[in-house]
Image 1: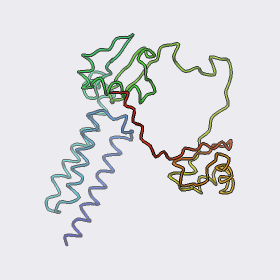
Image 2: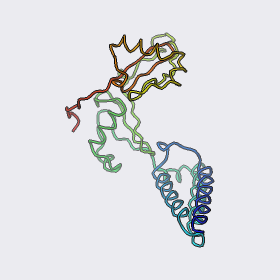
Image 3: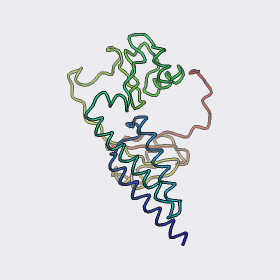
Image 4: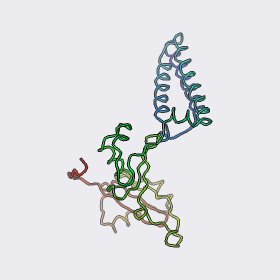
Length: 235
């Protein structure tokens, strides 16, 4: 009987969670505001409680899930119609750096220390503040960076040319294992791959951490590295 109750409440929990997810909308984790993120965790916790509670006690967590889902759904409609409410619920962007000035008060407001600030820059491909004009912390927690004009990447339009279109690359080896389906997708076979590896002076596939191949038959190989990078330049 207890197993049947657990089965029933689990199904109800999954169905309710699915409906609420559809009501809230499909967004990536990086697009969620802090409010959305916390509510998602809360709803998930309630769903877990609903799935494991007895049938006679399942009404409370079920109603709680519905209340959370309905409130989030209504707030999403209201924030679409009101800029002030949207800023209150989802927050607003904060300028952390502009024209050579680091705004320490804004960093404190965002609860970001200087080490985390610099790590975010490195994650976005910038290792020198002098190459950056403005840094903005978006409401969803992501960092947007505007480079100085003479440091931004050159595009084909700047040079008056139209580069050829890049295509997706396929992972053909991961952690020493050949991915035969991906290799087949590139139009190549194992023999071709082995020959290419020999040209890269690689004898053992187990030595490869990652190998990729594009539609132009360009193979990129990354070997396993047994040594640690000991330099610590970022503290």
